[in-house]
Length: 217
Image (cartoon, rainbow, N blue to C red; front, side):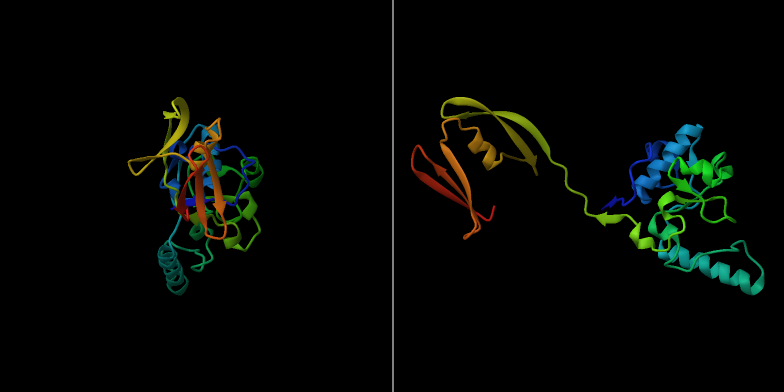
C-alpha cells in the first residue's frame, strides 16, 4: 500500500528519511516532504513526538483527556474526539524540535506549513488544512503499490535480420509487447489488431497467411 497525496506540490520538498525521525513514511508524503525541507533549511532533524495516530491511539488519548476533565489529574489536557484529529488522517505532527517549535505561521507559510491551534505551538499541519474541517478531503488516498518490473533491450532475429526490442522481465519470464513486435517489422510481416466483438488480439502473418488469436489479452 502506498499513499497518494492530494496536497499541492508547489512547495519545495526534501527526503523525509534524511530529516525526520519517527515513522515519516506513515504521513502524507507531500506533507512529510515539506517538513523535511524545513528541517534541511534549518540544519536540524525534526523529531516527530506524534505523527500518524490510529483511531485506537486517538481513543486512548481522548479517554485520558476525559479523565483529566473529571479529576483534574493527568498530563493530557486536550485531545480531539476520535475521528476528528488531523493526526488520524496523516496530516499533523507534534514536535518540540527547535527552531521549528518556536516558528510562527508567517514563518511557516513559505514552507507550506502552519500551526492552526494557537495553544499548541508544537502542532503542525499542511497550510491547505488551516481553517478547514473536512479532513477526508485532504487525506491521502491509500492505493495498491504497483509491482515493479525490469526492462532491458534485447536483440531478436526476425526474418533473418537483427532487431532491437524491449524485453520486460516479470516473475522470471521475459516478455515483449505484440505491438512492438509488429512495428519492428519493416516489411509488415505481422499485423496486430483488436477484435472488439470477440475481445481478442489477432495476429496475422502477411507473408505466410497464418493467423493466431490471443484470447482477452
